Length: 454
Image 1 (cartoon, rainbow, N blue to C red):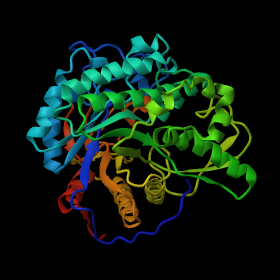
Image 2 (image 1 turned 90 degrees about the vertical axis):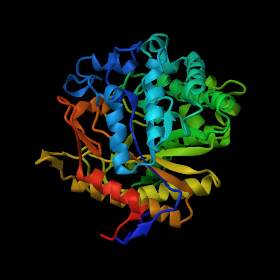
Image 3 (image 1 turned 60 degrees about the vertical axis):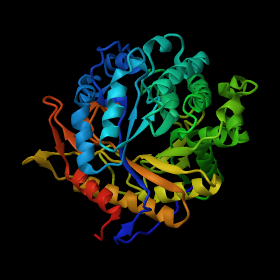
């Protein structure tokens, strides 16, 4: 995938009449209440206790206290006119799923479509102690968990997503260790890739069995990758990163195979040996939609090896370059044109597959003043990416909906509470919610089903 610059004028735009407008959250980031109602330890609870692992020593308490304040939060969603809410079910809460019963019922009462992600990184610590995602058996345990959840909620959830960003679970969790469980082992990272994909396929079978009429799929964080120059070395660097960021997940799910070059690149780390007879048939079970999480694109070149562990095994000699775009507080470049290219290329590669942007948003240094947050940078970010989404529609992309990341300020993983992505400002001491200017702007987008001239 390569980034093709697009131009977009600030004109009024309208989206298809059945376009889904939503917002998304993740259980560990927002729920809090980590020790109540039978919840067990997750890998993120353990990781947060590790000195220096999470900024400021922050933990999953209090999160955004969504576990106790979900009714208030659903009212906020309703006030914004959201048509859908993408939440994740916490595997550590398997012993008591009552919260999700209440949440789903509350959403339906207010006309908001529940979309459930079955895994958003909070693996039970007990399973990690048995090898975690590097252990093939974890995929089987995931299927059992999915069976229980879908049996409980399948009559009321409108859309299922098996995994959120398995790239992060594998390469950040087991490759460079900056996410839970904090392992730095390239072979474990590659094993995690295959076992997460297997878990997805097994989960699809459970969903088909328990809720055969409900659309289901997977969410991947996909990045267009471009070489810095036309040199063969830079082209090979881009090929490798595209392979390990995008194709290592897309090809097994969509085509039932790993690309030959990816298998070759990952052979030193054991990928071919992990694949058993029948695995790829399971992994490539047909999906009804693909969730696309997009934040930026990559510009890469061949370069001197970097110090320390890298996310991608075998790619420590790749440099990631800046393109000169403005940056968010995460130091990520703002590149809406990459979203257009990504959505169009996916629709061309996999015709007939509905796409949803399941995450897109930005962190900025929000300041609450006089009862509001005037987050003009975030509004500009969202406006640009929604215009990019519309441009993709005009070029034939089968885009069905957009979920803003995120509804609430929350625990931003290893960055703690310092990075704010929310449409709603949360005071983490009082848990007071305040609609940011971006929330009011987004409500206007939802109401008019499109963008106004600006």
